[in-house]
Each structure stands twice: as structure tokens, then as C-alpha cells.
Length: 132
Image 1 (cartoon, rainbow, N blue to C red):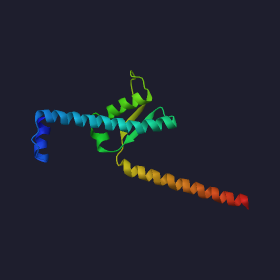
Image 2 (cartoon, rainbow, N blue to C red; image 1 turned 30 degrees about the horizontal axis):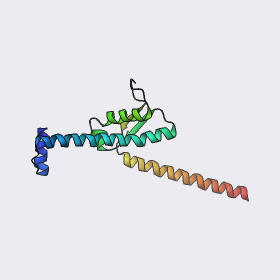
Image 3 (cartoon, one colour; image 1 turned 90 degrees about the vertical axis):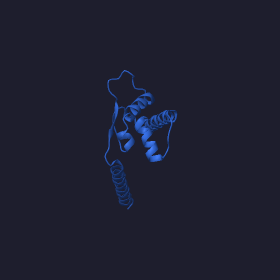
Image 4 (tube, rainbow, N blue to C red; image 1 turned 90 degrees about the horizontal axis):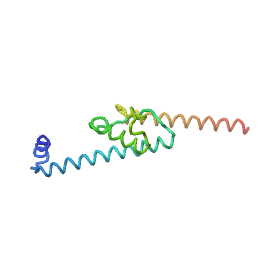
């Protein structure tokens, strides 16, 4: 806690007491747990809607990839929501890191949009030929 206390003083110009540091630590931990659980909600919803029972989820971002407890908290929460056995040897759905996930995600969405537009155009041309 002494490193954190130093950073409070140097970066924020706050001379925090030990009690304030303890509260700060607990608050940060609560926020991190909530973040993992909120992330779980979206993934669980997609898995349930699509009937996905196993696979990988790629996560981009500092919290998902650098926080030491995020992936475990995420997996535990996902197991609770989906109903995985508590005595499982491995998680059916695993979080993995995605480098530049935002850029890749945008490219995938653009490709899907072009694909759908091309299919729609092909269907219109087919409808026009059949209608003639």
C-alpha cells in the first residue's frame, strides 16, 4: 500500500490516511469485480441466444488483458450465469486476448455489411429476371 500512497501524494497531491487507502483499495476492487460481471452479461446473452456451449471470446482493452484477476472473475461470473459445474476442470468458454480488437471488429462488420449488400443486390437481380 505504500506505493499507492506515494502515487496519491505525487500524482494527486493527496496525503491519504491508512483508512482512506483501505477504502480506496476496496472501492477499486468493487469496481473491477463489477466490470468483469458486466462484461459477462453481454457474453452470456449472446451465448444463450445463439446456443453456444463452448469456444473462445477475444477481449481487447487494458482491463481485460492486464488486470491480474479480470479473466478469472469473468469466467467465474460467466459460469454462474450460464450454470457451469463448479467442479469443472476447465471453462467451456475461454477469454483470450485480441490485439487491436477494435480495428479488427470494424473490419469484420464492414465485410459483413458488404456481403449482405451484395446478396441483396443479387436477389434483386434474380427477382427482376424472374419477373420478366
